[in-house]
Image (cartoon, rainbow, N blue to C red; front, top):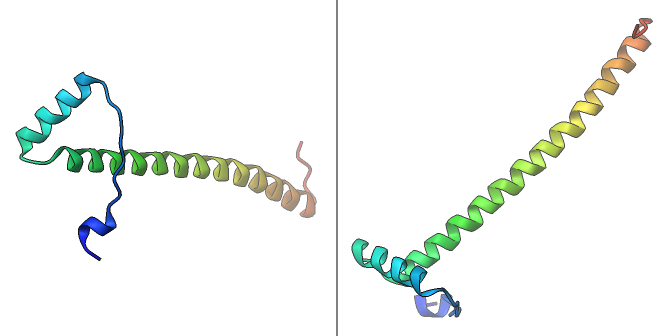
Length: 84
């Protein structure tokens, strides 16, 4: 497959000031507007995925904390010690 066959065209409406800033940046870096937009979308999606994974880790650690506390208490009770 050629590069044109792999890409899909997407039409996005942006305010003039964003397009002007985008064009200025792209021109200054000698790149095409679409390349800057593509990299920006990739970065945004990667950051969203990181945030989602962080939230899943936080939730998992919270759930494990409760489980670990319950297991520790169960162990102490099994060993004949009271919590008090």
